Image (tube, rainbow over all chains, first blue to last red):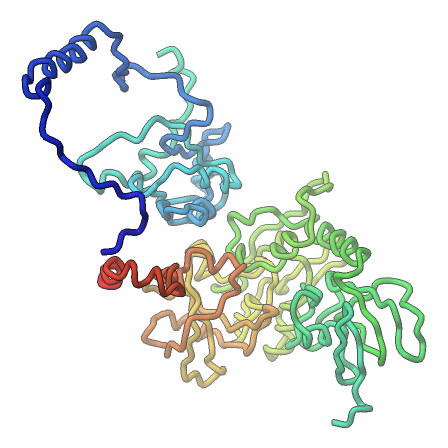
Length: 170
Length: 337
């Protein structure tokens, strides 16, 4: 096939010199590099135990917010799913019954709200599209898992826990 | 028709010859495009509609050939008939644009901002109008008027909060249905759509009030909160219905028909009214003969995420030289398609 560019270089293998044939200088050189690293500061950070300072605009796992009375803010308007470039969000809406007034803020709520974390690219467009300030990408990293189905996060994982003042000191 | 029986009018500098007695709005619709004034209350299929919402205001800068004085105020184009040699300004007049902005603000005074909840969102005329002409903030500081939801029959729901009192549904009830069971009661700020003791509208064509409503005041209860408009795919279909024309638009979500509406033209008006059996009961694909997907305006939110062209066009299709150079790669891509 004709080459696409003219930057291709053909390398020729030359016979080894005497220093290369002795073999030991190269071994020593390599080992010094390895040994030098024993005395250096280890730059690795052991993530879950040790957390680096994050940037303020870091986007992690989504959370569905509650309002000041503890009701879910999401009204299943579908704008997050519409704006999602990866099409990771799906939802099913339901109508709030009078008995559920202290659970949901608006007369419509998301009965099912799922985000496929394998599809999500954490662009934050859902956060921007939300007219109810209900979704924020303010959580930690989405953790690894073994099965694909475990990456579809439902409301059990996404809705933030209810604020309880008794839990503050615990 | 002889030429002398036609009136020539110019709208935003584009001239068109129309029959005498045509309104400015209809003359503009014959031209089409951006210069068509928006209309919230006028409905060409409903006799006597129009003149209520004032969104179609235009400026007449020259009354006619014989009397070239301009009209003193902006006029409602849906109610003003054309004169020979009339010159009309719509989007070219800053006065009209300003007035329209004020009208939108006025319409939105009592309109709740519950678009995230409303089923009409995405195909709502008031939403489009507010987006195009309105300002982002309201200056209204008082409580909006609120009403309880009313069920008109078991299939139609009236949200009086959202109503802009365009009277379209009243005209529909008057003209399409045989007996009047639904009207406006009260005056001014207290005016509201009501059915008089909430009597059930059991006419076969009562469901059409849902289609004519420009906002989400009258909605389909069978579609309530089922899906958002932009997650559904509209498809043209027809059936042999003995009561109506049977020409409808089916709104699919996946394999399921979740809503049936009448077909709408480019001005959002119903082409032919459909009966309640077609609208509420025939919700299986087997009931219908599918024709084709409904053409959607590419700017509309309904078209979002619907991909019509699956394969992006090949970048190198025009360049003969590059094609020959990359033949092997091209063949591989073709094989994978």
